[in-house]
Image (tube, rainbow, N blue to C red):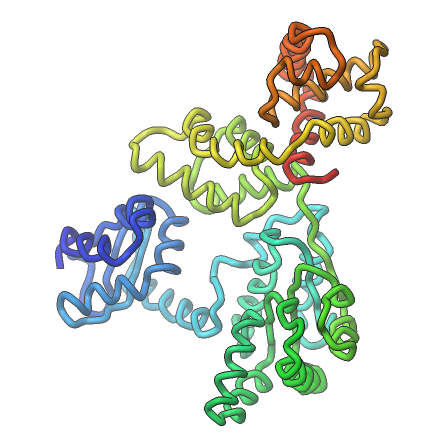
Length: 438
């Protein structure tokens, strides 16, 4: 099969967005391939990992369509050298991970630790070293996209290297397995699968709410594993006590071990996440671009990863360097949506709280240095983070006209250039407003 034939098939079978952004980059290395292994090259590890996780089966289907073979798919970074032995070893490793539906890139080393997730990280690491002995069960809770699944799968990946039998599923998959087994009168197989493992990892346990029959089965599964000193780890978007429609005996058992939360990361942790994700995937970003992304996106790690893929893919497809102008263009719509959700009273309240003054002082005629500085910060953030015009901001703050607003914005920009402390205050406040921490 030629590269042209392959691209023609994959284009028909995939979405236009996925093809143009990622799949179009695949280069079939026929000279390095055979019936057992088909080798492709892309520009970086991030895209390689994404394509393999999303499109491996479809790529194999392309080969079946052309010549009836079904080779293992190897996607590597252009210029990267791998021996046949290394490819086969990696295949075995990936097959092990796929058998438990784990993402091999979710490890403790690739997780960025900060004050917002330190406890959950330390607890997960401790569990991975001594599964079934310390913190059993471990219950990790927090908002969407903050790293719960990463920690859950890092435990699983670590356990696999120790030779442990690992089951990782969402609670939806557990329920589907349960329903299927009842319909097909095959509960023995279901119970053997879930009760004979060394480590059971359950994602999104909150969706067990209101499922009485499944709760009954999970209760007995939990007891069997816990009595056998097998490790149970669960994630949720809330504490066990806050999951409505969950029977009390399950709530009680979920709290037997340790509950650890993951909070929204602060600006420094978010910057560290962007740096780490960029480094792991060979994407070079300047400090200016990293700060722009950190202060203009919310704290969902999934969203950050998606943005990094878009940035790298766009730069590659457009054959241009990654600069601030490119990134600003790519994030234009997301930033616009954010601006529509931030209101002027929100800005005043959070600035007043952060700078320890009364909200009413900012809208008053007071001209003390503290109030004037807070007012300048509010004006700058209002212009940056909302769609309000300068006359709108002046009217809201009770100022004479927009010329005062313009003067304050100019002064704020000068301070950002010269005063590192003022710049840090602005970035922290932007981060809190974007993440709705008010």
